[in-house]
Amino acid sequence: LLVRGINAGDISNAIRLATDYLILIEDIQDEIGMLLRVYQDQDRVLLGLQSTGQSNSTRGTGKAYMDNEHSITRLKLLEGDAQTVRKSVRDFLCPASDESK
Image 1: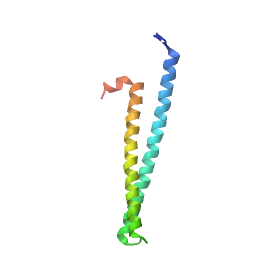
Image 2: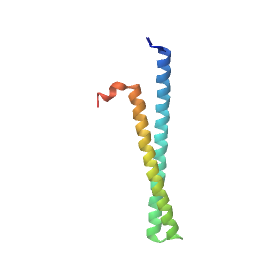
Image 3: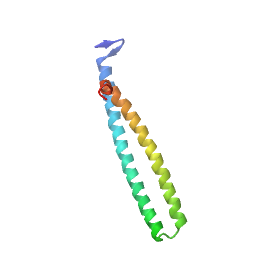
Image 4: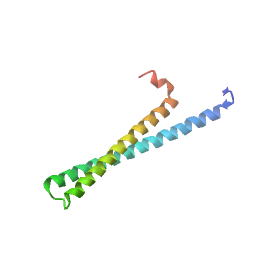
């Protein structure tokens, strides 16, 4: 197979590289998901402490809650970015998959 200077080895390497990227992206998505769960669990604990008055500093608890909310928002943006990149790589590997959707 030869298409204007691109041989089968080049295509094979491109597919292998794209597959490696896909694996990395999926690992990153898993890690983002774990971080989101941790921050969401922390939010529940902070809200519980705040509502029961067990926190030494309600103001500190509120700030920690807002920091968590900011982190959750940023992680969700990263999750969306990772999904976009993942779709692009999958479309490269399986261009016909768009027709089946």
